[in-house]
Image 1 (cartoon, rainbow, N blue to C red):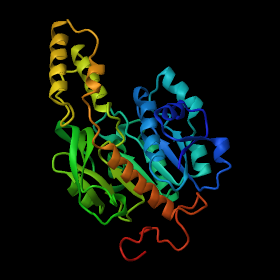
Image 2: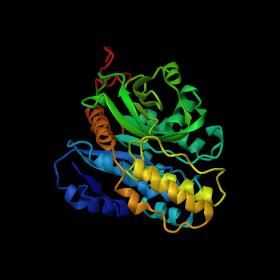
Image 3: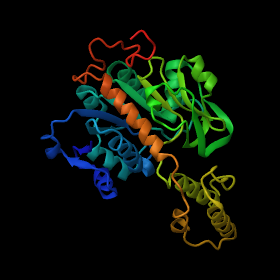
Image 4: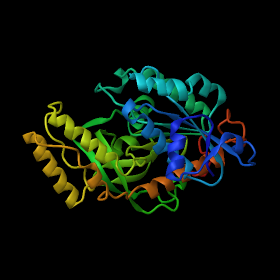
Length: 353
């Protein structure tokens, strides 16, 4: 069922133009279909704020035919914003106070830019912990993306991420390690996920915290894990929400920053992302950047040579997640679990639900 455009957020218009079904609020009010309310705590910087909205809205909207989806974006005021980013937030985003008052069925927490080695020193740390604590007691399931996964692992489980000697960057093959969990039901046993991070939480750390690892890569490490109850917190260490062009945009940003002397060297290619033609074109452009003869960035030429090998699986996993939330959530959104459901095992996975 569709997303519901319950405000004038521009992302709804963009998604309609892409072919995503987005229902006007007035029309949705006449549908006898269950509503699910999903919060999006968007902590991304201004340049990626709206793209991140669309990425997660798209996954939710395409995920499952069981409900109408109201997605409620909000953010943390402590995050630095420019004038345009703040204006967008002031006009279209909800406050955490309102989110807390109205309640949610599910919550997605995005990544964020960081400037400190220890996440607890970031300006968003205490407000983020407040949201995480509230969600633990009041939301059926919270899906954490990358940096949010690292924050929850540090705050709730005492497992700090570890800086890697090289960036985990590219599109990596993963395998399902627990085929029986409903989050990976009908998902290929091997699938791709993009990653873009310098830090890692290892399988040993997830297991030391008592968490269940559901999918991992021999190269990139753990991607998908869940809290001991099987649902309350879902951890993504990769970026299955990425658009086809997301890694290209990151590469372009770093390439141009290096040309301006703002990075110590030009970036390596993301793994398993650019084909031979794209690599050749980018090497040629880098050569022109170095000798000062570069003109327009060859982005349009590159687009035809980019493949998306992860979106179908991302859609399936998020669809399974929404299905689990629907299964467990009580009709009163302020109560996360149905009467008779064990909150320590809401899906009945471990024989004591």
